[in-house]
Length: 585
Image 1 (cartoon, rainbow, N blue to C red):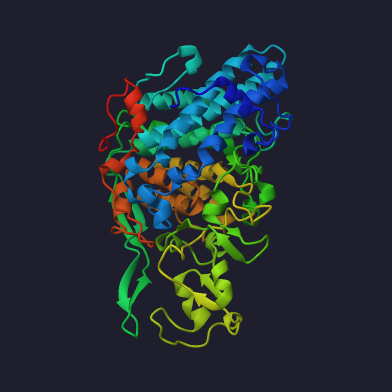
Image 2 (tube, rainbow, N blue to C red; image 1 turned 135 degrees about the vertical axis):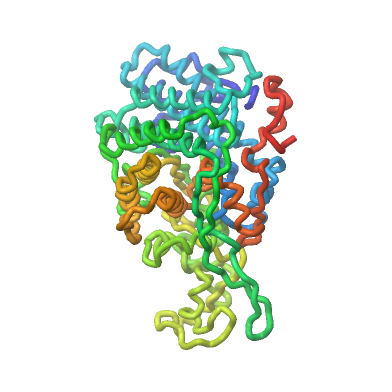
């Protein structure tokens, strides 16, 4: 945690007029002011907004600003790959040398401290209505809870701070057991549900977190606790394996041929810290909260049509329950989301990428889908061109198996027949290689106003309504209601034109299908690692790849990788934390 964060700085951040965050996008339309201290923030609705905006600003300045996020949430997972230079120590599993992980600890704690300050000042105001103040405090509570949720999954036992350091003057805060941290998360979210506007309230502003957001996050929190507390030995089947086999082409050269993933049955390992939690009681709670959202208790939520889901203009639709949006070309409130996943063009509207588009999914992930599933038909980039391919009319394609239809030659260079008519006589040189240049790149983050700038107004979803539906399906399955689980699993599948399940599997099969559906639905949204961790199959899933993935990124993992290391400077200055997580010095 930062020890010297100045309250004046927090307030100035809160009133910078250029900040845009999806959850408070209209908070910051006021003119920027200067030379203002916390006691000079006006006692009004605008003053309330200033404080809440200061809390939200932490996500962009400084968690996402320097590209540490989403790296720390996303890159350590079995189905995610990219260039070695980008994955760096994090991709190699050497977490203690990964400087980005400092932000994973410090960023959420800075936000938590700011939220405590904001609540204190908002509570002291006299002029805003109680309803307005309550909603603002509910937003702060939600942000605190979400920050703790990130931290407890990443680090296990962590400090919980009920007041800001200006009040306590205390910097040495002990780690609390995992169960106690979750109690703090739940209490904040339950209070937030009571205080926040729901979507049907005329005062609710589109894009803000709402009572439904808090209820949906509660369902996810309970499902996380439940799955992590499931008995050791619980079976989960994952389709995975070594990415390719080495062969010789007709010229005797080495080639790498991607193979289909196979079913691997893993037995859950106990997840430390969850031993005294009753998983079935937690699943009951997860089911209850998810069903409240589904039934519209906090306003109407629905799955967006697939073609609309990732459009720029639909970022505040009801499916998007909590996320952040950056400001285009802003040095402070920017993200690298669009650059990481989509890349930016040489000029606006150009077909040629200038840079970026690095992070993608592996062949093991791509092969999970039915061939007509929109999540690969439209959700994966099948053709793309970099600026350096213009001189020779080159174009990359994905997947590898398309080589015959594009070129007429199979993978080992044998002529099979003419390419399909639409690809014949195009004058293009179709290229594929087994490196980070050719992955299953998502199209989720493509739609921006200007695709020729490095930092456009990118959106990062932290919680979607699809998540609530799959959490409900997961809880129902574990509670013995497989038909109900199938119904809600199929809702998500139907949206993407996937084949629907007609007969419910037994519990293990349904459990595995839901976990796999989550991998497909939330790919490149920073969720996969945490699903593997909570189900106690992270080590098995990572090591089943056989060492290195499609891009030659190291995926071998040991027990020390189950938790991130606490930053060294926190260990050095916080005398209440005497040791780091297991395996980290």
